[in-house]
Image (cartoon, rainbow, N blue to C red; front, side, top):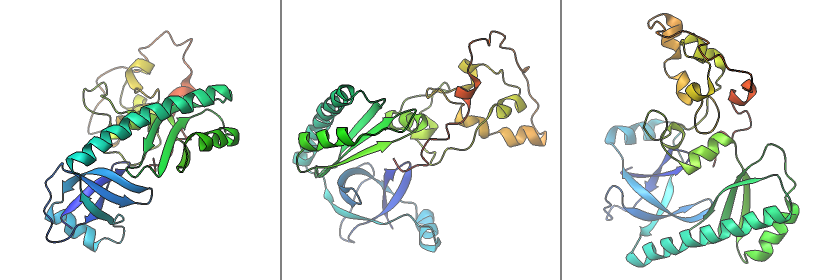
Length: 251
């Protein structure tokens, strides 16, 4: 495999491209997926990675290459993004009308506009049958998918930069969220303060797991004291724990 695309949750899928077609890294191509036709960015695959894929029993699904995007296709893609904004606010208005406890995060159309996916978060299970009925009447001949995601997935979709100044781990390379608790911070001598150890999503930083084992093994000694944050009267520790309702990657 010479090419791949980043399709779902930081997972690269090999791309089936005819031998007579040459693509450049970063080029936009049209790909056939389980959701329909989607415009994705192509990446060149290292020969060693390609060999590992061929020998692995867990090789990601191979996606079918349809064509490169023309200037007209790029204009269509821009129009779709505008339609996504319009659809977002229409859905948001219907959610408010039905008084549902849902926080709409994002709306995405496939390139062929046969399917629209609405991503939302909610602290409880939501009965959205009435909402779905109204959405079906609003968006004709379009398959509608309402996808409940966790707050970590919300941050992953919206993207951004963490306190380290680099792109969020969840939107750049993490595929699954590991279980994280306050013990990880204490073992590393970090202050148990929300502003120090929580991310934009409001949950504990994913990077707390990266070097934890080194501290446990004793190869690294904590350089700070624990529990330096004293005003904890209004801290809900449960909100800092790992979000167990967060999905495992299929967003």
